[in-house]
Length: 629
Image (cartoon, rainbow, N blue to C red; front, side, top):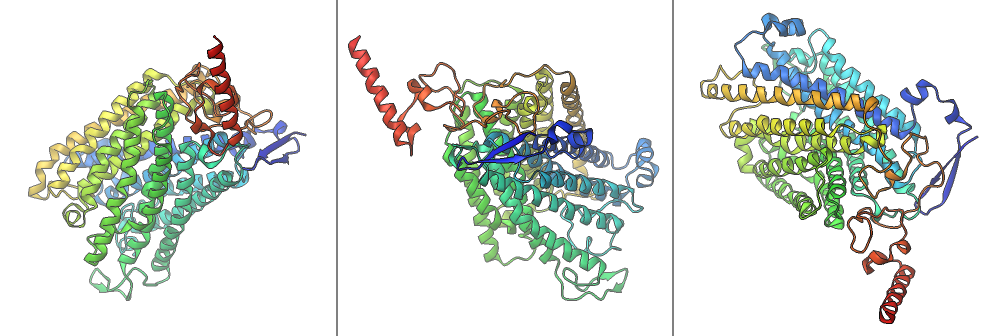
């Protein structure tokens, strides 16, 4: 009989007798229905990568339509059948591709793939915990996510195709099954999938918050947590508070679709026939959707911010600049993200005074984001930088966050947004600041913690190739879209050849499409590197990056429970890099201050009077010895 021991944040040890379970692991319990947080993290990661590849393929298909709107491609008919008659995309199916691409990327890759992977992997390992608060609920969280993914992809198999009203599923297109082909069964499957997805996210979020608050190892107070954990913690809180609102909106939408209610519908005419709906408002749905939708932006980007902060500190060989400011800025983003959703709705006829309120809060939320950006740059400044692939992707995140964030100031202005709303300017903005930045944060995490997940190293040369092609490709794809948007080119149009004033942008769309194909091909280098390295990569050492945090104190081989003996005690914050007076350029969190007297400073002994007294006595002894000499 083996025993798992977990510590709460008071250092009290709890024993969990698992009745020899770990000696009888079968293939199913180890790899499929695993309750080990490390295996669940891998399941989230691999599922997220598969979904990202599918979303990328969908984007290439509709980009081909935008680049060559009047040409036929026989391979499209071979691939898509009735959805591409004569080798040209059906216009309704084009809208479905845009819808499912956006849905998969925002929810299934950047939300579940990012948070699900790294919250599961790092929360127990960096806090000194044997496993999540509820391993069973953790497993259930993954499988609900997996089922939601299958249902979303399964909507391609229904007769009229998947959902087509856009990833924001605005009524009346989403509320009337007869509105368009993508409003039928495909839309119903979209709604079903999203309810399961939200249930998965809530289970995960409750688990993450419970584990962080209740199960930290001895000595690990909140101010000794790495910024990754702060980011995951606040992201989980955001999800727990915001996602139920989407479910409420979806349930009301199902009522309108199936039971004849009028929450979102009023005075609708279909093919000349006046429908019986009265009293509803599609604007109500927008309020419910964006009350989730804007916190969702930060649910996506905050984990990537935390990962980038950790990777930059490790590879700059410097303490993170402004640790407390970084934490407070994350808290500020968390609070403010709930009172800015109206900037998505400036053109809905909103009261100008209310629009002004949302504009002010939108501009204020730029302040904590700017604090983070400044602190990242200050961390890099004069650092002894190691340009690992993970570090390159983390720096890439900062680049996208700056260039994409600046355009957010334009869109946050109520007067300017009237001209820019629903144009390619919006597409450019959120694909840079949210899409590209978050993806780069996720990839930085994959390259950095791959040795911890799989015990092997990824090939750095392929990593550099992957970075440069993806980085250049992303800018070539999304930067020109700003100019298209400023000229009033609307998003989600099937073809621009029908409108004389927009024909001049077809050549730019062709350029963007080839840049997107280049960026997509670059992902082959990553996929090969990832899969090959799992089986044949160079074997990793226990702490390949000379990092200070707890996850690098666990053995290389996977064990359920993380540490074979007693869980280490934490004594110091997670960023003791290049400390003057120490013989190495990093000091692990598990090293007591009594072992590093030559590098200690008074600030290290906040709330530790005994330690400060010992430090003063040591200094006095050193001074006496110097005088004797």
